[in-house]
Amino acid sequence: MTQPRISVVLPAHCTEARHGTSRLRLTLISLTRQTLDPGDYEVIVVDNASEPPIASLVSGWGLADRVRVVRREETGLGAGYNAGLAEARAPLILLGTDDELAAPEMLARHLEGHARAEPSVVFGHCTFLFHTELFHDVTIAEPAPKALDRAAARGETGWLPGAVACLGLADKPVTADDVMHAWDKLMALAGTTPQFDDIERTVASGRCHSLPGGWLAMRVGNHSLPVTVLREIGGFDETPDEHGGWYLDLELGIRLADAGLRFGYAPAAVSTNLTHPRGAGGMLGVVSGMAYVLSKHPRMDVTLSPSTSSATWASPSTRVCCGPPSAGGLRPWRRGRPVPRPDLPYPYQGAPPHARAQICPVHRSVRADAHSPRRDLGTHRPHP
Image (cartoon, rainbow, N blue to C red; front, top):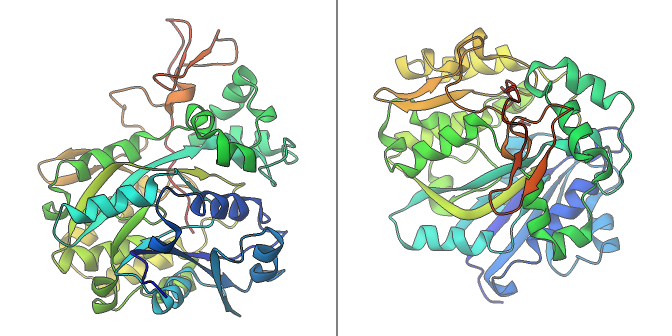
């Protein structure tokens, strides 16, 4: 058997009560349609006690010959990644998630990023399909009951109902055909956040790994690194699993930075996240999770990081909110601080419900009335 060049590992805990399996199915379809030769990569799904078992679903989706499933009878994001790490056969590993669609060239761009630099963590360009949080099953245009009301009630997504009304997003599911044949359509609807823009710009500067608090940039979903490095530092710490997975990625970032790994950026390695409805218990584990990270890494840059300040815990979907790079590293965004640039993700910029909006496919933005008010956005990628 030919050794793959990169292993994609994604833990998944799918149940009908959580958010179903539609996001996982589309994620796997996107990963099996990469421009790389199929022998150059492998996809490993770690089934964290899903019901029904993912292996039977993968077979029913016709993907059994392209996807390897490792079954665990327990939940836990960190333990899931470690189980996949133990199975990985390639020298590189991409830390995927079960709701992250991969552009056709994403894996090829990750390999290019590693080929031109010393051992490093390669960050891809992460975008979001914000409107999919309305759908339990993203392939069907049926907004979940009160989904818009819940989005409107949260400060960081209060703009979403207006965008839905303006752009008809409630009638725009994401289908397998879109993933396979209409990626540009998805990119026209996808957006990002000021926080992710700032993180990626800081990583692209080539200085992120050397800045105080540069480890705050670490995420999972579209991030790859050498398997040997991840194994040498002990893999993922599984203790955050006891705290809902909070800060698992940042704790890994601390150890990667301490090991001297560089953080590199591959802007053409594009992915888009299928956001999902937020659970009421999303904040559970935030305080205890950070307390654990502080006890494990009792040092100044961790103690003073924005993730330890209650001012940055804006909502259950908020992780660490980082602002523009400064001389001291990533500057925290705090609630109430004016944001010195447009805040809405680009398909929805300046588009209140009454705006005359037109999607511009070249710039992937929305053109609206010149006097449309800007709307505040403080959302950040939800994990776990």
